[in-house]
Amino acid sequence: MASNAKQNVAHNGADQRALRTFALWMGWAISAATVFAMMSRKANVLEFVQHDQTRVTWMIIGMFILGVAVSLIQAMKLTAEWFRAYRIAATVEHKGLAGLRQRGGGHVVDHFVDALHMIVERNGRADVDALIDVEFSAQHRVSQFVSLLGNLMITLGLIGTVLGMTITMNGLNGALGSLGTDDTMLVEGLRSAMNGMGVSFYTTLIGSVLGGVLLRVFSWITDASINGLQDLMLRTCLVHASADLEPSDERDLRALDASVERLQGRVNLLNMALKASREEMGHMRKEAGLMHAEIGQLAENDPIRKLAAGHARYALGVRPGLLARMFRRKD
Image 1 (cartoon, one colour):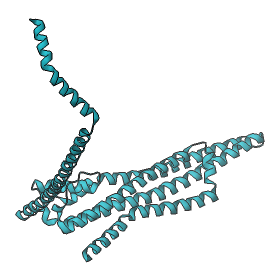
Image 2 (spheres, one colour):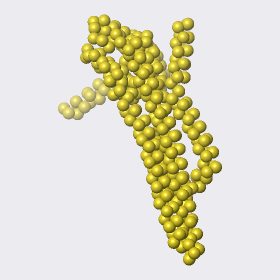
Image 3 (tube, one colour):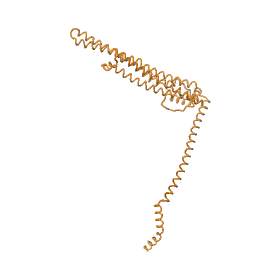
Image 4 (cartoon, helix red, strand yellow):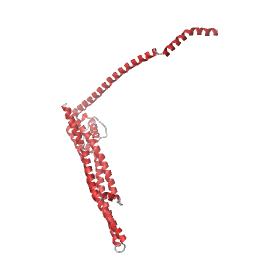
């Protein structure tokens, strides 16, 4: 009982630690959304985005939405990886690498364990560091993609700055050209110059905040989670599975013991299934006997059966005389 209670406490603690990535991601998302909402309300960011004729801010916000979606999906997948990794670590700690079965599932840690099993079965030497880097490289690339989107948003903000300055210079040039001659053109030129200054400032602000701050932090959260997973699996292999990774007779014996234990478990399940089948067959025989008795009783009490039996006896009684008359007619 005490050991079971300790195991339950350990599992609960592992489950809580597994949620750190998703909790950290959601905490940063809520904080960033709150700060950006306050900033946009004071600076009228949403109003400018709606009237932005250059569409640069639209592209920045589109990239930001894509990056947030990719990062959220990755954070959820990493949370599932943490749950599975803690269970693998607990199993290896108590039973060694031989206590794990090859799953072939969709988790990265399962692919890592399956690769270790293949190396052990072929009596090879496992380079754990290189194998971990290979298995988790796809996750790192996803995190780097989110960081790349942040850099592109910063670049788009700078492009918007240059574009806004160009619009400003053209507006000022038109305003100066119409100075003292056409007040309408002067006002239009100044208005164009102010719009250019707005494009310059707002694109820089949105690109740097959304891309340079928010997306980069999201990328750092997922990247740190991947590094933590790699450290957990590496420590598990080095501390609890190092003896299983070196070719030796003891490793073969442990693998054989684990195979025999799994085989014994399957035999026990087969025996239970056979026992249950025998019991079911006994019940079926009993039910079939009862059904046969009931059908026989119903048949004996059936008036149609009695009438058919009377007709049969009558036919057998009259058949000899009928045959004799038929033969006499032939003669």
